[in-house]
Image (cartoon, rainbow, N blue to C red; front, side, top):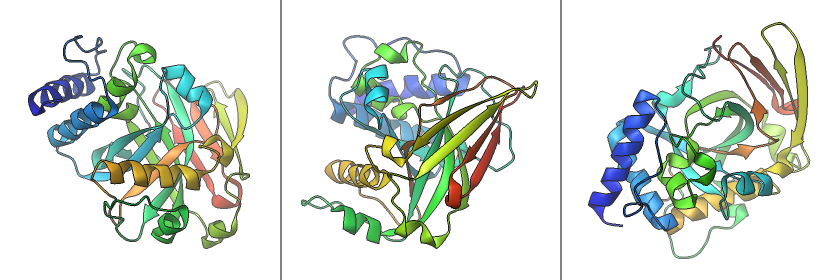
Length: 266
């Protein structure tokens, strides 16, 4: 994909992200057909946003999630600093076509992992991690019909990145835990006080959040980007995404890793 085409696609995504209006599919002659073309458009989008890169997200980290949006594997997206919501801030669902909350495990890097020819091992990646945080992502797509947008177009759409809430750092003992087996539970409390519950675990994230993190590092390696100290990676939802409506509160219990609550504007 040429730079002009990537820039045009990025401009479309950015305009609809700003306005909140739903976007039709890209025109057939301009539609990205490869993951690389999708990432080129996403990189152009980063230039338009203007906000500092705070971290990365991984979309479609379960087989069910991949089938739902018609992709062959995980997708990487950028999380910008201005999309990180402070604890206690209510999140608006206006213009959100997904209306879900995703409990996630987030890793923050202590040092760089620059691009190189050989893939990084899981041990190398984990050695570069400073801390584990609990988090909730609230994704959204700019596409009206994101289920049928296609893999490359969804990458251009920043892998459905939107809002993100980063909780507290987990106790240092997280390194000794089996994160794949680690249970995560959540409650969605409606405005009338009624609640429903859902359970999951780290195994929902490509079998293990550490596996997902290693995938992301190597995806960026292939793209020639690498990862930098201070940036984080939120690895994907630990359960089936939680359906939310305006006025709801999502309460997530990560066990010994901590708890996190997120409110949605009525």
